Length: 259
Image: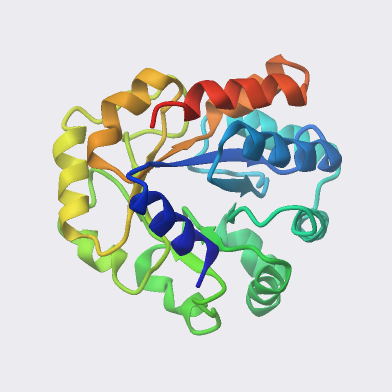
């Protein structure tokens, strides 16, 4: 069973919500990113999402854009990130996701990228710029027992929700706002109804992300979801602390003690 599916089943049996923490791979450097993965796990994260930096990240707000640029300036590459995951897998079995833009996959080579992800132990892919109408290009080369394709739905998805979710696995990524990622993103005004609608139409667990930055946000949304995704707030904390691993672990603990 895929690690993501197994983790959600485990947490649901304990009546707990999944905490998914995001890191920009290579910010400030590859070795620090490895430390941060272990820090998130120590702090109580259940799943970790690694962002592969891209020069034109349409879904990312200013905090993650800046982190991606720092990583690119430091010389991060897809191969270095794949090597990072291979090294991490020697020390932890925590579910790992890539947030990656489709252009990156195309340039690297679709089959080559998918095969490498499956070989090194990546458990899922979030591809924000891949519409469901074009997903079959990847689905035909993916082994869903090894690698989940995580669907994204937004408040504007409405009657497309069933189509977007169909054929996917792992969990559904519910975008909480109409903007880009970021702590100052405002939640969609009818977010409770929107999350209930996704939940009603989904055979998969649902996790909400974009704009979640503190314990109060998590408490507000937890009744309608199976998990939370926190990104910009973590990236900002890393930058503010100068990459202090202990400070990061303690920060994550403040977000994960709500169950």
